[in-house]
Length: 330
Image 1 (tube, helix red, strand yellow):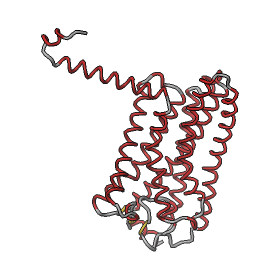
Image 2 (cartoon, helix red, strand yellow):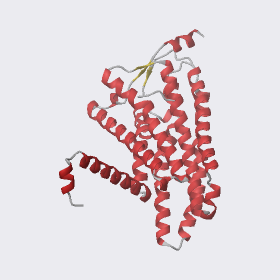
Image 3 (spheres, rainbow, N blue to C red):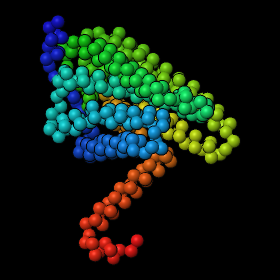
Image 4 (spheres, helix red, strand yellow):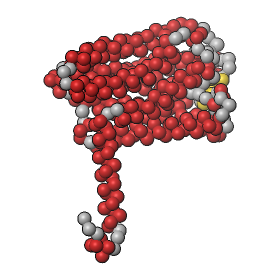
């Protein structure tokens, strides 16, 4: 019990992302630029979905939730990492470490489930278009989003409480740039083999089961697309679905290795790169993938920019003298 109390009272030391690289400042500016780009991209996508009535559909409602996760995910880790780099210190309290683990697990699991449910949305849209308004009505969409958040909260509560229950009486140095379950378990002076096994088992359930449902949905979708007679409809369906498939591949690729491969096959540098990929790179790329490959989003962006430009011209004209305004030929 004394060890537990000591561990609660102590801080952890985060090694940081830049300690494994020689070009500290260059890497820092690249990470900062990517963070700001992702924050801006997801915020713009959320704004477009909110203001354009053509995007008030179940697919874009689910996509707006994905953007929320992609905003929250980097906010949990990158500002803390940037602050540590600029201040030259890398301490994190026990409570701060617990908060990072909780929110990362919450949003990670919730996003994975949401991506799977989005594949069901595409399945209904392509395979049962006439029943789409009924099968994807507002209550169903809210249930999907609520289930994602609830599953994330439940998993985060369990994983966080189990991980922080162990006594950390050995080294306090976390060889990672944020608190993550696999990195923390390596520091415990207790036997964590059962916990690591449970983590891998839960990883199978949390990752493999959704991926199986995703593959099943898109198996039917692919069959339906190949049977379409209209080339235009086939191209539109394929473009929309390929965007989602790309996002799922980016998200699950790193997560599968991180939480399903046993800890003996991990090394700190590799874990840092993979964690940076799914916590920063993927959230940054997601809005670009959906905006560049989606005609409706591009049209909404053009509409907003055109409207903003028109308002700017009107304001600029209102500041001119009346005789100048009257002389302008429209």
